[in-house]
Length: 589
Image (cartoon, rainbow, N blue to C red):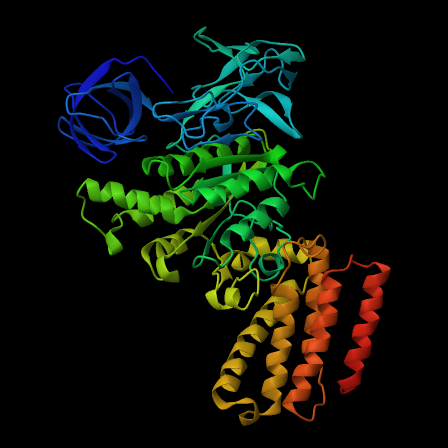
């Protein structure tokens, strides 16, 4: 990140972490600079240029900074280091390895190397001498935990090169030269396992970006069954405080069918991030049996860290994800929460005295969020392999207001909307996703419909639509019962309401702390959805509304025991027989 300074300036004004600098040298937008405060060099980024006045957001505390302090401009954008050794790491927003710091708090101006230069990696060449390559092509691979980490031709390489030489399979450090490339002008490049890339610039070295077509299985029933998230798709989870956003993200991180998980903690409270630090290393990956942390990277930027670093943290996470996608891997990014990032953008916009938009957020908030979400996606690489980035963020709207600017702006960019309900959370119906307010636009894609027909059932979409309709009708019947009273509505209203409750308790609600119920494979989801829909299609004979509630509570109790039982085990079949016996008591044949 540090480069030799050729341009200088002087501080002329300071407003919190916004620093105004005067310089006669030409400076570029998003260029990095270092502000000298005593012996310390504070990192900053150019965010606005007006004639000779340069506005810089400083990523660290500006305490002690004075007018007249010298500034060095590097001529480079904010870059991160990419290479083997990132998995299992916990970074801050500027990619400093937090485990390398001795003190409890990061000292101002203190940074650490992102990768370990002394570690040996077993390199296996995938290309050979004489091959023609370009940026992002695979030269070889190393095994990073259980993930095949491909060594790529650096993204900054321009044009086509011929491999003049490549090392044999063996042990190498990340800085060792593993290949020499030469172009038609006899220009040679020595390539090692490390490269750098600016975080604000998308990595677009692929042949095609396709519309998402495959479902990303999360093991969370309310998502996979009713509101599916596509591999390479985007979604977000808004909801008031205490409705379970973080727990839901943790469940998805643990269970999703992704090769690499990147968890970006953007401005969340420190105690929540500490929970991530302590829980993730202890979790086991249900797909491989290995530690979940072996395929996870955490980017930590808590609420007590500098505001400007929140923006850097989300872009750092996305750039790392694009790097792994270029290896043909499935990457899942979880950002908690993008509201904190938007608040940081609002603070900087206000300090720059820009024209404010709704709730004083920047006028271009929608465009900034849309451009960021657009970096996710499913791509076909130059070699025919495919990779994907699935992005799922959380939004923390003030007072639970889902009409506030950040939620509205994110709605326009994301294709999945998982609205968390305070009412459901108060009723302990977790995950508290409101099935009637939430939606997945991927269900409208013909490609996704074909995938669901082929991999789940030809009747799956119709069944999902039927379940949603029953839930909507159940809510209407509940409101009628609450208004008119139990005995003020027809008996059928109670029956229809309780049929919707069966779907709610058995499909929507899930125990994230139970060994069996925490993760539901798609085969089991199909079985349970078909089972509850069969019950909803049956006719029953009742004498009073008290009889209706008691009867359906017995059905729900047995179905919940099915969710806690190993699928198709002897105990599972026994519970099924018990369920059929209860159904036959009141069923009209």
